[in-house]
Image 1 (cartoon, helix red, strand yellow):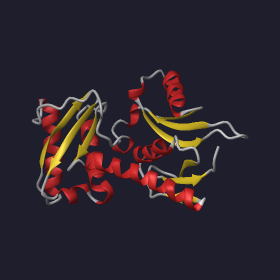
Image 2 (spheres, rainbow, N blue to C red; image 1 turned 90 degrees about the vertical axis):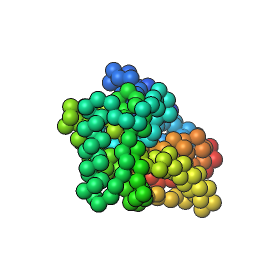
Image 3 (tube, rainbow, N blue to C red; image 1 turned 180 degrees about the vertical axis):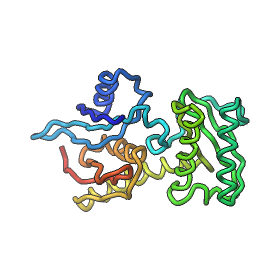
Length: 230
């Protein structure tokens, strides 16, 4: 399910949502919709959209490799579920006309990371990760059919997820410099919720720049605009 909350800061908005929904913070995904910093005439606030675990199978809400409580262990599948998932992903890639070694990347509570090693990694990743995201979506749908809707499957190849995060952070700072110089705004390319949140969070503490999501559907655009000094 989807819910929207507000707070004076991002942390306060998340705390409010966790309290009202009766969930722990790691049980839902957060999409920052809008940030408004304090000015003489207006009080600052952060508006967020919360996606609860009904969306756990949708990779677009969390494409990152976890930073903590992650268990990097035996890359071989353990148990019937992991083996079936590995076989399914390998089969899909073969039907695409490519070969890949599919192995376990990490095991975390309610998350399972899978690495694709292939001489055709660039094709499997696709432009801006679109092919990798599509494969990840199929893996999550299949995981649900196996009775594991609560587990989010994260696919990666050639450390693309981490490299994409680093690229987006650089893009955020570069865009902030542009709007400062031009005293106008820049509309970024369509991004999934996780990528948009990264842009919002990166620029949240920059006093003279603000961000806002625009558009409809899953892939919205972030507008970065100049607000002047506080």
